[in-house]
Length: 276
Ligand SMILES: Nc1ncnc2c1ncn2[C@@H]1O[C@H](COP(=O)(O)OP(=O)(O)OP(=O)(O)O)[C@@H](O)[C@H]1O
Ligand SMILES: [Mg+2]
Image 1 (spheres, helix red, strand yellow):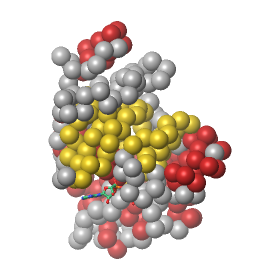
Image 2: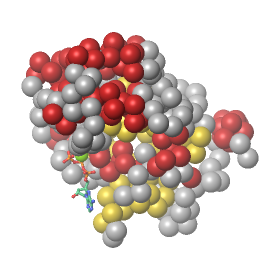
Image 3: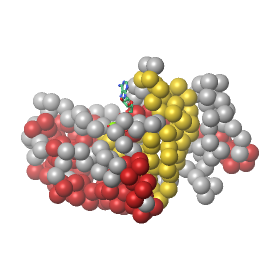
């Protein structure tokens, strides 16, 4: 059965999906919301449904479900240890944590059936928290390495247009860049591949406010081109100002899914779940 058929059948029958990872163990824990439909009844561009993921015996992601519309920026927030990075890693199919149950769909393709390299090939671009700039390679070599295999995304010149600082430092070793420039390189390297979903894990971490603003502007530009993005950020206020929607995790579960503005307006909720 093709993914497209799957979605059409969902719309028609509203029945439980058939291809669920680890079906028996978590039977009955999924919310009523269908994974392939947004609240408005439209197929979501990205959706994850009832994700349960473990590091060995440690049960960390405990039934996470949400969806993202095409071109939307969603902020995935929560206190330290809430499970944000683990959720992003489960979506990118990194393998650790191990996804034991759930469905993940991107543009009608079942990510939950894929390994990380397949997820990357169909358009998942994870920019990890530690940035992973490759030692011994220049800025340009880091970008070229990302393009070693198709599908190719942005050209290197286009990435330099977006991040002129990278162009100026194209021959400098990547690991000698400032923190902000390394973040730009990590984002640029992801755009060098043809991605449909950008996953950003704490892109502002350790950066001066002026650099945060610079990267925010770039993310706005990327958004204006229609990129669908999930951003995890400790700097929740900055993320909320940029995002259309916020999802808050607490102890591996979704405790809020709604408009960013609702979180900005609700001091009690911010205090309870974000400590801000
Ligand atoms: N490799 C691992 N092995 C075992 N437990 C882990 C591992 N990585 C994370 N955890 C645990 O999983 C839980 C969620 O961690 P995760 O990194 O997903 O949280 P987070 O919301 O990203 O937190 P932070 O804001 O600190 O980055 C924490 O209790 C953490 O200790
Ligand atoms: Mg984290």
